[in-house]
Amino acid sequence: MNDQYKKGKDLTKEAPVSPKLTLGGFVIMARTIDKCRATLWGNVGEYHFDCPVDNMLFSFKGITGDAFKAFVAEGHSNMEIAEWVKANGIPKTDEEIAAWNKDRLAYNMSDGAKKGWLEGENVRLGLDKDAPLFDMLIADDKASVGGGPNVCM
Image 1 (cartoon, helix red, strand yellow):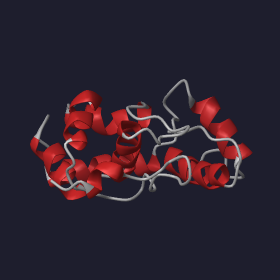
Image 2 (spheres, rainbow, N blue to C red):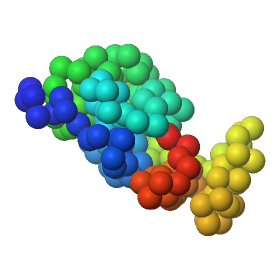
Image 3 (tube, rainbow, N blue to C red):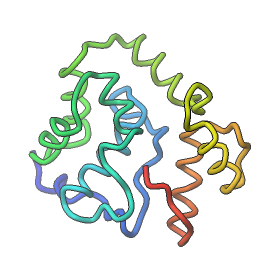
Image 4 (spheres, rainbow, N blue to C red):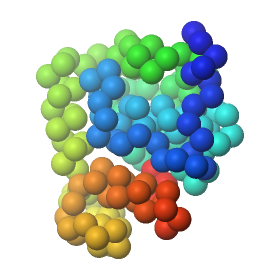
């Protein structure tokens, strides 16, 4: 453990990393870590930890946001956290993780009640209305860092 990992990003001044960034084999994880650390150290701003996006990872692995947060709070590095996620919850093969990543990268809520919401956000941000959720989050992060509205996932 190292105290440098306890500080984290100040999400009142900069966005978390892209949800597309892969850490330990998983998309979403690095962004979730950024938001978790910022929550723990009081600089999360408008972002939310343990939100529906974070819960994509938590439910896939069968872990809870509270357990993840407790481990992060101990001051572990990103790779140590990734190893903890792999070792806990529901075991997943590399093939299952790759398929889950592919699904998350393409996910555009076409199967859910929130599809209209995502379409509206995509249009607001200048994206194709059917753009994936992760593309919307990236565009929203860029807009919010510049002072625009932010959906904060």
